Length: 188
Image 1 (cartoon, rainbow, N blue to C red):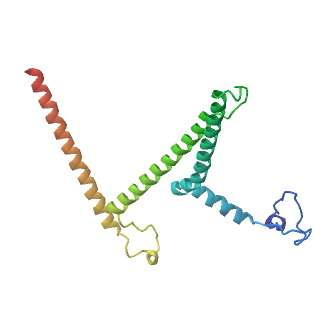
Image 2: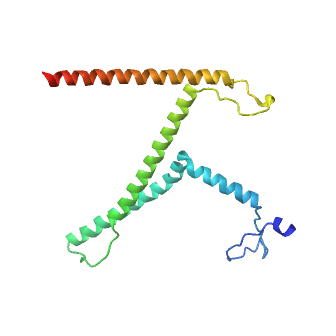
Image 3: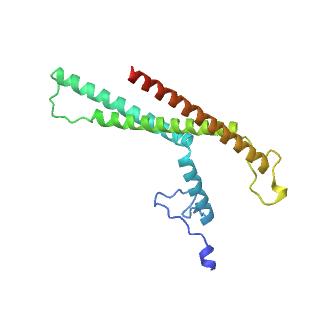
């Protein structure tokens, strides 16, 4: 049982030894709980569109640099061929592949921004239509003061249902009027 609780040291890559530190370097030890917390944090950050956007920006910059450098190399190569300095034997990097990578990153950034916008819209709508949550705790001392009581929550839901029914009925009446006008025009 005691052997299960002992953390396993991470293996380090062999490299040059710093004489100031000595031959014995400090080994970073992580407990299983710390590793699990780091994994959960990274998973949460993967689902956060804003964090994903921030992570993609440096990749986009590198991709843009790559596109520009490949384009300049291709221009220089084509110019030298046009001037008769070089033959067409030299291989150059493909511009279309680097441009496709750049566009793929742009698409990912666009999706992240759309997802973040949608999350924000849903959050605003949620706060607007149901500003206070119903407490789920069974203990009375954990009830928050800004929470709705269950009866208040039920009345809010009933008002939302009646509003949805009114909209449904208005749409039905409108569709009947449209269907009636189209039938009258068909007779004439």
